[in-house]
Image (cartoon, rainbow, N blue to C red; front, side, top):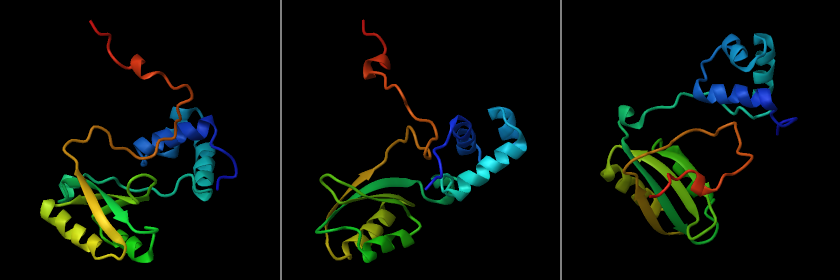
Length: 167
């Protein structure tokens, strides 16, 4: 856990790093208004405290042979976080797994080469004890896909403020 909450400078640094993790400390300092050594110390602390969990490359699914994106809702009898269920993480096609409240127990984000590969993955899921059903939602278009953002919304506007005037 962080030893303190990220302050305004930390959030600015994090926002820049989310957009471009290859930014130099000098560049970060210029953008956020701190010296490069000060930014270095802050980034080191953010890593040490787990705010920055890792730095990684975000790949373009179609470019690596996995253009088929789907979300699979897995219905399970009992608690869905069994060791065998967690073994699904061994498949590189599985990008995210979330235990959820609601009408399903587990949501899995998967990216495969095609619908046949998704079908093969579903067959693996049905082999797991306790799985009672699945619902697959194939993505047709993606409008927004991004990592966790450092900024937070303080004053939530009403939805009507985003809509164009009618008339």
